Amino acid sequence: MEYLQSLLKEIGLEPERARMFNLSAAMAGKFVEAAKEMTEKVTELGPNPLKSKMKDER
Image (cartoon, rainbow, N blue to C red; front, side):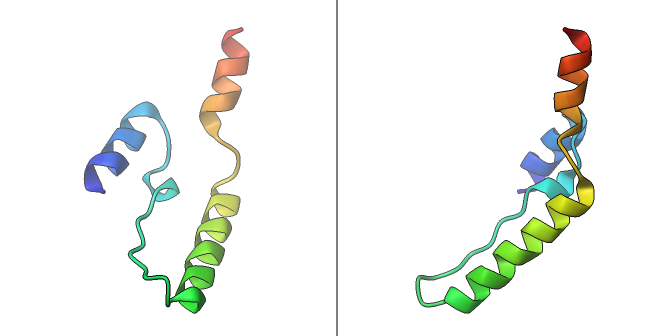
C-alpha cells in the first residue's frame, strides 16, 4: 500500500485517495463505515487534479 501511495504522490495525486480495508463477508457494518469514510475523504480532497491539467494541455 505504501508503494501505491508513493506512486500517487509522484504523479501529483494525494496519497489519501487510496486505502486498503481487509473485511470479511460477515462485516457489512464495517464495510459501510469504510465506504462512508472513503467517500468523505475523496469529497474533501475534491476532483482529480490531473483531469484539469489534462484539459489545459489540450
